[in-house]
Image (cartoon, rainbow, N blue to C red; front, top):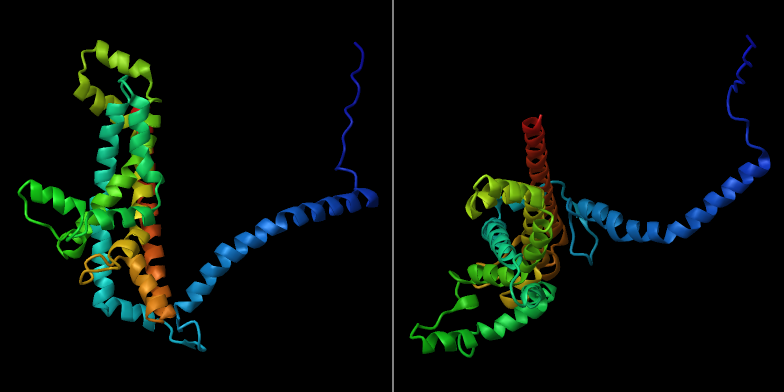
Length: 316
């Protein structure tokens, strides 16, 4: 029997010659030269402002005169500020109303538009168009429509025999009107996302459920909605973040009024930093909002992870 050749073993890679090392250094330098503008932009527009505003939240500053260190005084003042408490309540109420309604309306419209009906493409476009419009344009448009004296809305109500409404000038209605305006524009995003998800629902599951005698309600509850769970979690997180950061619509329409009924957290931050010249106080409010957004994202992630583990356990 012939002897097998002995395997050739190598203790380690041979050392790079000086020329190869110099070439690698040149390639590394060239790569950094290409990516350095993007790195500088990221550092200049994101990381540096975040760190600077964090330091600013511990100082008393008007962005003009030299600032002074106050430690946690800004945060202590926030805890006792009734205006900030009102802004938090308004923001939470806005979020609690807007997020569930936008998801329910978006899902309902997506289920309707997922069918084969005439001119369905036109209907989908008309529903999505308001989402493309800027909040500034929406605010200007609805400021004219909802004007208590000359607006078209009160003119229509007058012809229907209904008394004129204050809308954006009524403290009891202003925040609800803002929610309705945002629903008009923001529901289109939910519709598009849900439509894409509905078209990915496996037809084999639907056909199997129909063969078992499931009706439309059972199909929606036991097949469609569980399949849409990941999309729903994403939309909850997205819509919650958007609603907690609402500003431009409030600025254009009500400017936080009447009587502070529409003052939300971001508008409160802008008002303190640039209107009242208390930038440190506004920065501390901004970091309270940042912590709230982080908690929302973390809670949604935990819920999503538990749902995934529960689904994997059911499959196994």
